[in-house]
Length: 375
Ligand code: PLP
Image (cartoon, rainbow, N blue to C red; front, side, top):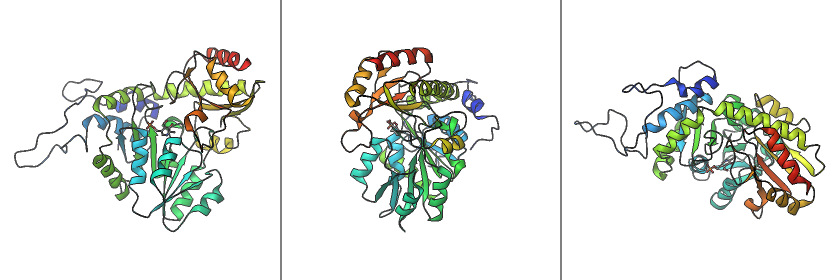
């Protein structure tokens, strides 16, 4: 989509270096118009007709995301859920899909309630993935690292398997971010982000995004779902998102460094039974993560607290700097007793606390958590 050949961090910092033609402004203005003037001969030479199918406020953030993901095109959505569900809704009637047992719980619930043609498998077990493929399988959905145990999927291997059977691979890369992993270059066909998280980074909007390797018929159907379902982002949110994306690389790099330090410290903490973080050498997905994640293992980790569910909830109750809140990927650190959120049927252990590590001074984060774990 872009001819800009600078490094990804440079592309992000300058939002591709676009300058407004009319004003020479470095930051784009916010387009608010919901409709566009038709030409006197009844055409739409501007290419724009109505905001639900096309919003000029999307041009720059979509072009930037396509460049960062090395894709042909990208599309913004009203939320991560709107982006993810658009991929499944673009499947034809009777087409089967495979999804991981450990994945963002909201999407898992929607798939269970709305899509009968879906099989859940352990995506780390390639034989299980192969065994779930049917002649009608047209989509494999992966999430890596996957929420909230941070299991790792070998994207190149699953992409090969998908393509051998005529299916596509779509990847929820929200927690890997384009800083650390480019699923399209590993063989995936579609990459999805809850842009609410790292892409925006400031816990002040809800947004979603997809990027695609090919502008094919499946991508056209996805864009039609966005327009027909009206799952579109507002102009102000698109503007805020672009502002957030400009600092993506510094935020993610700092969060990764903080998460690694915390993981190393917490693994020797007497009150912690287990640290789940792909950056640790004894994590079952470490070798694959080291290959497909460049420059860090992400800002997300979970700990299993000695003493079970009540000890975990008690630990979260004793912090103040860490905010007890859902969501992730913001500059501020969040802590969450995840099983309480996910409810019945969740594969999340009851003693698990999910940590979204922010960009604060890691000594402050470690000191407070270690004190809270003590009693
Ligand atoms: N994917 C992941 C990994 C998430 O963590 C979330 C939200 O928490 C979503 C998708 C859904 O995104 P949104 O809340 O923007 O709809």
